[in-house]
Structures are given as structure tokens and as C-alpha cells.
Amino acid sequence: MPNLGLTIACWDYDRTRPLIDGRVQPDGITPNIQVLRPREIFPRMLEHQEFDVSEMSLASYIILKARGQCPFVAIPVMLSKMFNEPTDLRGKRVGVVQYSSTAVIFIKGMLQHDYGVLPEEMTWFMGGQDTPAPAPLLPLNLPDKISLTFIPEGKTLEGMLEEGELDALFAVYNPEHFLNRSDNIGRLFPNFKEVEQDYYQRTSIFPIMHTVAIREDIYRKHPWAAASLYKAFCEARDLAIDGLYDTDALRLALPFLIDHIEETWKVFGNDFWAYGVESNRATLEAVAQFVQEQGLAPRIVSPEELFLAETPRGS
Image (tube, rainbow, N blue to C red; front, side, top):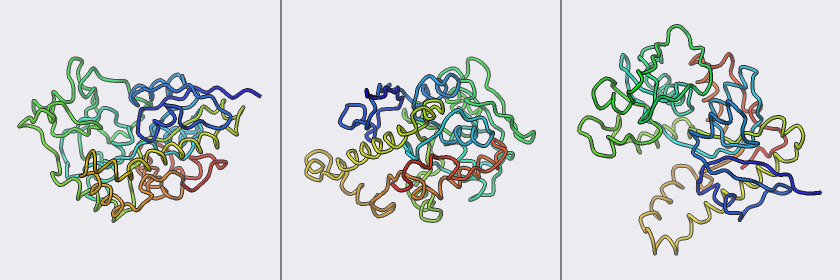
């Protein structure tokens, strides 16, 4: 029997590169991997289901599951994880590229649960960070208490922040003005590293941004492919992580990385980039709660509902 051909869209992370370059091959599958930025993948998959398998915004996937309108199934691969920087922004004007993006949902959840600042206590502005405004990934249907305005054509969130038209920007990548050391823009927490470590140690939440989604019609025809893909993604991650621990290479190239890796072990443990449900349960339960609290989903979705039972639960 010939291998199953699948188009897989993801970004070029260290943990996906072994799949991209062919060092890891999913059993029974011939992957056609499209290397694209998440901001290009998500609308193409969510609106048109252009790929058989893709990196997927965790929040968008949870929202669709909660609404009962999800054309995807997912495997518990956590391709992207990232901490955010909560602070007291009550009464402030805040810019976001996507109000329903996973990063923004985690930030709003942290603000609410750690600082008592509710989403309705801020005024939201949505648009492009440094380019024209993207359309919402999903219909929002927000509660009336949320004030959300789409910024005018010709403006960007970075420009509005620099000009003082916004008080804060929840960004998933560093604004150009910040990288250029603008006097008007700085981090909310200069000691963001300590803030992130403290948050993780108190909550066991390591915010997950992206998972891996399979079109449901593909899964129904080829259910075995889910376990094969999960196994391949785990193998690719393991190759990437093993490379980090090559101390001979580190001493020759970037000696300071040894200290960084040892610090990561100390905070997160050896399995700091865990896949699977159980290893990520606290984070999955938190984001499902935040999505429902913020009026983006009608109910809380359990981790067991999110991921296929046929794939392993561990990492």
C-alpha cells in the first residue's frame, strides 16, 4: 500500500526542523510540508481548510470546539509556548492584532486572576501591528460590556502606540519602535524574566500558543495517521532538544547558553517542552476557562475533549 500523502503547514521551529528536512518521517505518511508563518497559516486553515494538517492557534481551536463548529481534530503537540507580561491596565487603551488570539487570551486571563483587572475595564483597539489590519480569525460575538474598536485604515498599532494614541500594545513579536529603542516605548515589566518564572512556579501554567490540527475529514478516512503524526512530532522535538544539550558544541559556539539551559531545567524540569495532555493539563484547563470567561466561547472545554483519545496522553 502506498504512503498517505498529507500537506502539513507549520513554521520552521527547531522542534519541527527534523520533519521539514526529512530526518524524521511519519510512519505510513509522505508529508508535503509548507513552511509558513503562523499568521499566514491560521486564516488559510480556519477560513478555507487549505491544508490537511497544520499548526493551529490553541484558542481558536478551543473556541470552535466550544461552539460545536469545529472541522478539525487535534493531537496534543504544543508547537509554541510563550509567557506574557501582566500588569495593571485598568482604564487604559490597549491595542491587539487579534482580540481572540491565544496570547491575548492568556494576558487577559492573567490580568483578571492575578491583578483583578477585567477585560471590560480596558478599551480595546484591534488592527495590524505594523501592516494593514487583518480580519478577525473567528467571528467574535463579544459581550456588550466589551469596548472593541477597529483602528482606522492607514493606521497601525505600533504607530498609534508611538504617537500616544494607545497606552499599551499586547504584541506577539517586538514592535519595530521598541527594537529601535524609542524613548516612548518600553516593557511593562523590565524584570519580565522573574515575573514569568514566578507565575509558572505559582500556577504551573506555561502558556501554550499553538497546537497541531488535522482536518476532520482526513482523520475520519485515515484515523491511524493521528498517532503517526504525534509520534513524528515527538521524535522531531526530541532531536531538537538533544541538540541543545550538546555541551561540546555549546562551549565552542555560545558558552552562555549552558547557563541558560541549566536555569531552564531548574525552573521547568528536564521535560520543559512537554507534549501530551497530562503534562500540560494546568495550562489547558486555564486557557479553556479564560476563553469562556472572556465571552468567546459558550462553555469550558475539557482537555479530554480537545485531543484525540487515540494519541498518547504522556509526552
